[in-house]
Image (cartoon, rainbow, N blue to C red; front, side, top):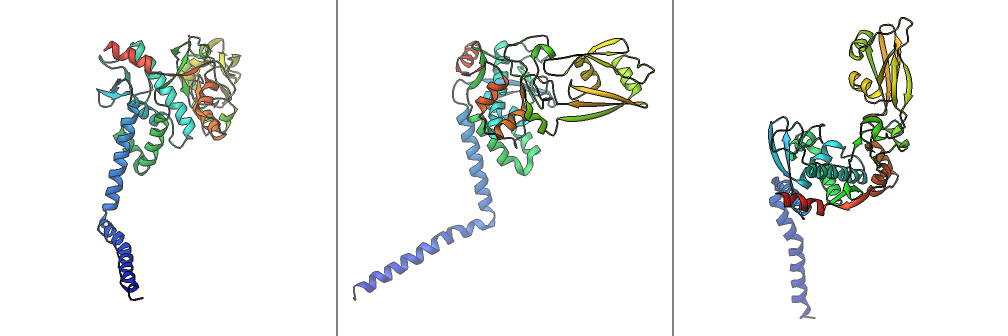
Length: 342
C-alpha cells in the first residue's frame, strides 16, 4: 500500500498539468491573437486553394480593367473565380455555381483560342464588363462583400476547384457558352436573337424560372418617349402595336406599330426592357410595359440552374439540359495549344 501513494501523487500531478497547460496556452490569445491566427489560417487556406487550381498548363488571361484603364494578367482559374463571383450570387446552390464555372471557363478558353480582340486595347484578351464577362478582383470582392467575404469566396473557390480544367464542347470544340438571368419559362434558339445558329443553343422549357424574383418586371414610359425611341407615331385610336409573330422561346419576334415593323430585340434594346417577352397597354399619356424574364434568353438560365440544383440536379445534368448534346471535356489539350502559341 505504501508504494501506491507515490504513484497516486504522480498521477494527481499529471492530472493538474493536463488541466492547466491548455488554459495557460489559451490565455495569451485572449487579447485578439485568436482572431489574428484564424485570419492567417484562412489566408493560408486561400493560397493553397489558389495553388491547387492552377495545376496544369499555365495560362493567363489579359483582362482590360475598364475603371483602372490598364491590363492585368490573371491566371486562368483565378479569372474564373472572379467571373463566377461577379456573374452569379454566392447564395446560389453549389451545383449551380459549378455550372456557372463551366460556362465561364468555356467562354474564356474559346475567346483565347479565337484570339480576336475586337474593340480592345492592344494586348488584352477580354474586358471586365458585360461586353465579355464581368470580372471582380479579390480586393473588389472584399469591398463588395464585407463581412460575408470569407464564406462567399470559399464557396465559389470550391465550385471552381471541383470543376477545374473542365469545359463544354460540341464536336470536340468549345461551345458558345451563353447564359442569362431568368427565362420567361423557355430558353431561346440562338438564331432567334442572334444571326448565328448553334445546334446546342435550342429552346427548352425552363418552368423553374417562374419562382425567380426577376421573372416579372414593369416599366412605365411616356407616349412621347416611346414614339421618339422607336421612331414611330402611335395611332389616334389608343392602341399601341400588334404582335405579328413569336419566337420558339415564346418571345416577341416581330411587332407592328402603326404600319412600322420592328423586331422584339429592337424594341427591347431601344426601350431598355429586361426581356423580349413583353406586353403593353396605353393609359393616357403613358405606356405600361410588362415583361417576363430577364436577359436575352439564350443558353443557361442562372435562376433555372439554381432551382434545378435545389431539386437535387448536379452541375453536369444542369449544363447538359440547357446546352443540348454537349460534352464536358478536359481543357488541357486546348490550353496546351495556347502555351505553344507563346
